[in-house]
Image (cartoon, rainbow, N blue to C red; front, side):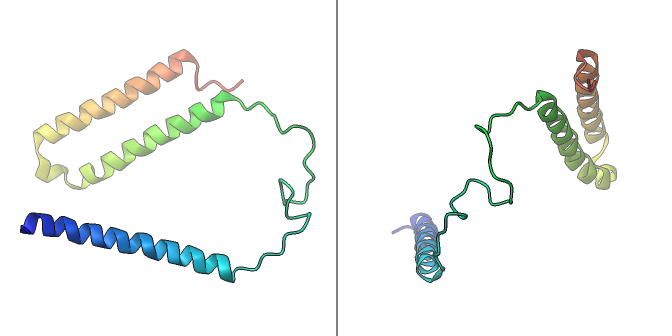
Length: 121
């Protein structure tokens, strides 16, 4: 067997060993855990408030838009911080590329403001 396939065999053996260990641990946990089901534990919510109604409530889409905008600017920060540390070594091309990236993100923010997405009503 070639060394190429031996390395895949090693990876496959470790993946199989990992799967077996997970199954063994889940089996041991299911045997050792205490199971005392009661009517209280079978309720939908255990927070002390009895569920009333069908559970349907409307949520504003604006919460998701704000969350999405937060994620976008958070990812931008993830890209900018390592670049800022290495900016001297990366050269002019990296500076131009980062400026293009920042302008693109700011363009998206301006578009969101013009569409009125950030207006809270």
